[in-house]
Image (cartoon, rainbow, N blue to C red):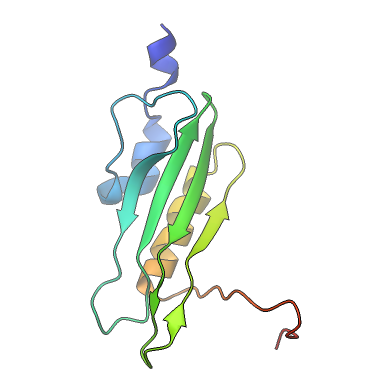
Length: 115
C-alpha cells in the first residue's frame, strides 16, 4: 500500500509528457531525475534543463538549468529553481520555456542594480 503513494501521479506524467524519464516508483525523499529538456540545437539561445523530484509523498521539484556558454562564448552559470509541493506543471513549463529560449533567468551580482 505504501508503494502506491510513491508511484508517479497521472498529472506528473501528463505535465512532463515525452520528457519524462522518471522511475516507476520514487524512493522516499531521494532527489530523482524525472525529465530532461534539451535545447533544440547548438545555435539555439535555449538552455538544457533537467527536472528532479523528491517525493515525501508530496512532490517537490527542482529545475536545474545547466551551465553553458552564450552565442558570444560568454559563460552562463547553472541555475536551480525550486517549487513548492506538487508544482509539477510550473516545473514543466519553466523547463520547456528555458530550453526553447523563451525565458531567460540571470544571476545578478548583489552590487549590480537591475536594469
